[in-house]
Length: 609
Image 1 (spheres, helix red, strand yellow):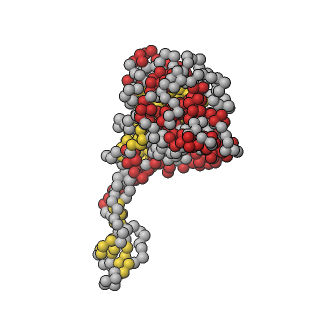
Image 2: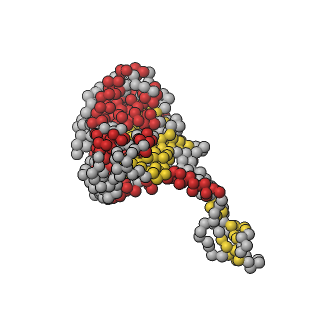
Image 3: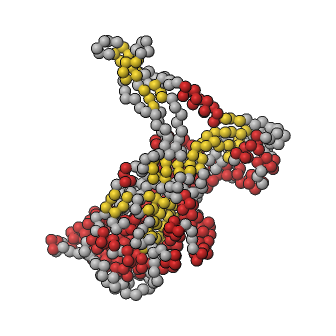
């Protein structure tokens, strides 16, 4: 057997040792400079302060290493058949099924004849077996050793991202598919966003040198050497992995954050996939499946996909209506289904708390109608102008929640969502004389409103905090420093804290007997959850399921938003996932009472429904 060992690690270390021995000038010399006082001519030089740059690691909030630069072993198979797969399996300790699967995953499509030899990643133990191989076992194998970014977890793919230099094969594959999809997929996570801090920088001196090699000052400021810094994420990798099991191959997202700090505890974009898939040399076939999959698993849903939020948006409308004095906490409305249908059979909604508990659509239709159709004394003769002014004021308050704009999360891409303006409706309805009846869908979080998963989770955090928030972020500290300065700035909405406090009893009632999500209560383990369900109407298939909430209700430590596309009812599909993540985070385990429920959800997640 011919086995070639390319020891990149040793070559790299030898090179770095040689560089560290002395600082060498850059080969590029600049135009000579003349000293105006003496007339002597000096040469501008650029000298590298030689030192070894090591890319920083990525760790979770509990200091578990998630991504590091480590030695990887790759087995290059002979390019020309035949290949004795039985002998190869015996050499590596794999069964025949594993050999066929691993080779199939490395091919861009079934039966492909790749232009370059197939490469398979090996463990250190497998590489050791190859080294001991005799020439009579499998011929034509080549063992490569190289340093590359290595993932120690299978969770958190959209957060961890990938190094662009190692993802060139993925980019080439993606370009062969629809161009629009390719541009939306180019998202390198925190690896790309914090690339400059992770890779560090070389130091440079800029001396002016005379003909004898003597230095006479500098021609530019010197720069200091900066080693690559570690990133400590806000993610709890165990909670992240658990949340991914609950979402699995379904289509949607789950975002959990600490409302007290804005730190994102779990960030799931489903269907989920292994983060190593994008850069691994033996995953071309898996990447092709991800690129072609109709559910677009490579789309970073929580940040990049904005959808109508459904009934969870009733919380925002209620807060704004309270602020604008359109209602009070004691306001009652009849469940008049001639206005809009109500899917819940419930007692009369004689207060805001009851309206939230039962998620009564006619109740919130009338809440928004009171807000939009209110005619102030100054506009008593002009109802059209009054509606325009009220909608503009509504939008001003809603935008203070961080909607209709990017929140500024530390990821390369984020969508702003959308809130309609009076001018938008003037154009869409082709008249300034539109009425509330033509925009009433805003009252139940449908129509033209679009929100991202990050915005929905942040909305829950705002209510938990009674009106303020820190920008959601994924990095807790950079090296020995804290998060970026902008993540330490507190932001306040334009709504008084008393109005947010008025929402909480209704959110707690949602989780109690008779509420829309009473089956998801955690009262049996002493946790009071405040939540709101949502079912988003969908003309192209099953309805979407949504849920937002926080716990404990009186001292919130976690806020969660869940959105399951084509999931059905928010109460039966989204709420159970959210409360299990809450229980897992707050208690560390799931109560026996919900174990069967947990297994059923995880089974459905694996099958993607």
